[in-house]
Length: 576
Image (cartoon, rainbow, N blue to C red; front, side):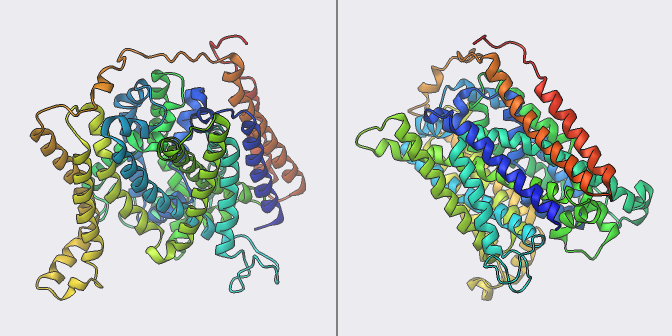
């Protein structure tokens, strides 16, 4: 990586801190810290939700699958879009109309305090692992790119580059600091900026990779057999259907996404944010997955997990590589910061606050919320360092998502519409599915204590040959069957369901009226941020004779987007 790339990365990170500082001064209470005061525009919420699905793990895990299997990775990612469109139709507005402050409040009112603790700790462990994997994947990429002078304590002597431990600590700290400072507003606004920069960076990689691959015709001639098939033996149509269902539960009920539906002013805005999220995931996966697919025909012997960054590195000029790395960092930061904010909010509001003898004022609650954000950040950093001991990024992400999301979140989605499901049904569903999932994951492994039993080898071979389909059966079909049985057995409504019977089903509008300035401020921050990035690209173009046209084009596009954002005039809004 060249000096120009390091300058771009440092400048970009400084911009993230600046956004955190801008919104940090506006935080007066915990609603501002954890729900953006319910004043987020729907498009900001939608883009933030879209970016919450991204991380360096996207480039490592799905980039690896795209490099090895081709179009299958595109099909998998389009499943997110289908799931989000269904959530916009069925769930997003429903969540907003409940009139709750956090998703944990729904769990508490519907199932009781015990269920809140169960969901908080279980989901937190699951998300700590997931975000730890993302931070680890980012550190792996950056360690391969960032050289460190000999004798400097940050250096890994074996490679001469930044050591993995220091990479995890440094970049984890950056995310924690701006999330602690700016709260959900900082998360939302940096997500929007990250979305634009990431699209711009990949937008330059794709045509340059096509050029090196010999154009579309050259790629089609050289691509491996079955590379353009939508499914394969491992990722079948059953897997795709189950993957869509799993992410319907995730996007519809996972707390970081529900938070996006609660932070907008109206139920209509919540639906629009989910539809924007879904629409983008329908049209853009091929765009995201093309670089590693094209790199397969250029360098088929490359490390699949590094294929994405190697593809970018092979074609982008100095400065643009830094922008691509910054975009990958940003995507990971988006995922981590979103999870930090939502779980810090739940710990502050729903776990710690009820146990305090004297309820502190809002400013003290804000301090407590920031402390919880910091503590969770430390735990995520520790988890990232433990990823290599847990089987690696790709296998870990696929397994924990398939086996945990359905049993945890399907009961929540079910309970939004069912009057009968109770906390015992949640516990039974989770325990049975977790137990069977753990058995298939570890009990049938070659190192299992059960390996000597009759029929073990045959059962183990079958389980490994159908690993993905079994994960879908255990993670989707089994919890749905258990909940259907519970629904059939129950004769009376659950004790606390009356609270939700009393909600105003027709309430579409939140009484909060946004001022014209509040509606314009997100676009202004995006505009000035893009203008700064464009100016930086212009300076790099002036200093770099090779590929100057690419850098100038990038600078001009950023300037155009900045002008559009600064000229944005929202309709409506009360005058201040």
